[in-house]
Length: 198
Ligand code: 5GP
Ligand code: MG
Image (cartoon, rainbow, N blue to C red):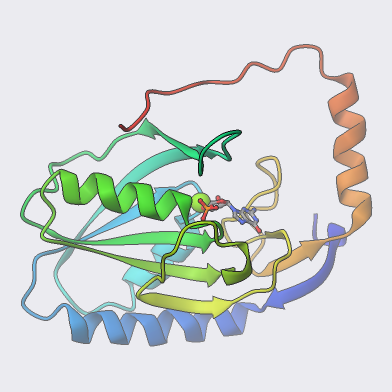
């Protein structure tokens, strides 16, 4: 798998430092508040696990799984695949994301959680790709900024692979070509469509 990586953009060491720094800031900012960290699956997985261990507060974790389809007409269509396990009303929420690109996902999820009565909703993201923005949004906590390239690793996938890389990197062209060959052999690819949020 690691042979498919062209270059590493964020190393394991850098990720460790990022989690420490963000954890400190969050610990300071949420003193005395009832905090729920909502991870957006599946990409948040390693980041969430490392980040929460750097936060010295009583906090709850929950997860939300959404899928976004970049719209043909509008700004994108975000759907819930798996909902939160507890009501969010009256809580301070911090959404944990792997990467913010167009901003569609976090903007929609933030709106949804405020609509459900969250006291505040902020965003912590490992990576920010500001060049990709279609919607105006600035995450409150950003690990690091990446260029407008497709990245994989540390939770981020390409066709569900590479999430288990311990760093963030860019794939070699040959990795995409390999997938093209697999696609040609696929007979039936069924898409699961979930309920719309609004
Ligand atoms: P947005 O709604 O901000 O455009 O996109 C957010 C989601 O798109 C992320 O949570 C991630 O799942 C996916 N995404 C955006 N950019 C990348 C990327 O460079 N690599 C991967 N693997 N996923 C990305
Ligand atoms: Mg994601």
